[in-house]
Length: 208
Ligand code: AMP
Picture (spheres, rainbow, N blue to C red):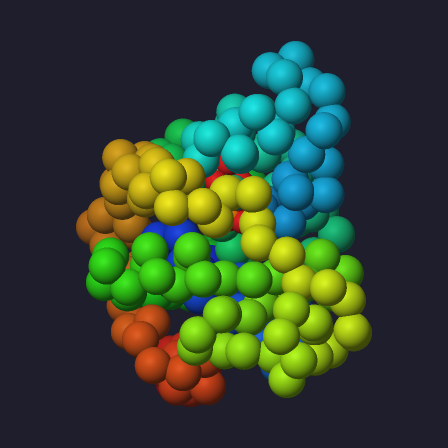
């Protein structure tokens, strides 16, 4: 199997996490996600304070903290799917010094749909599975189908923080999308429809 190096870009709520997990399973790639890594170390003291102070406000965690996570993860990976990084142009430049990429895929979802997706999202704190209170309910309300744990709402999925995350995305991460578009590297895929629909579209890009 080819060791693909895939970058998945898109706004918060576009489905990057869901699709990255599927890509990692399908092609036996490492799933490198700064968001999950930071959530696991939310209370870690750094010289900039804890990640939680930034995350719960919807702001970006300082670059040195996230760059270090990515460097460590890339060292161990042959093929990978990168999810949630880079989120600003400085991170994109840092990444380009660390590795080449085979595919840069942009998941496109209209903004009004993102707010509904994020505020209704529920996650499993044990296995990371995602659900939605309306669009993707578990068999038993509030309980993970995969592992039986109680589902929770992410601290940053409240409406106020979601709106700030989208503002931060527009200000910092849209220029990253433009950067890859200008390079001719960006492949745009609609992120609307079911997770299966979206995965089919991404597979088309990777395999053709
Ligand atoms: P995510 O799970 O990707 O939505 O990330 C959740 C939060 O983690 C973000 O709102 C940021 O506070 C932080 N975070 C994740 N990835 C990065 C990154 N590449 N740069 C800065 N902060 C990040």
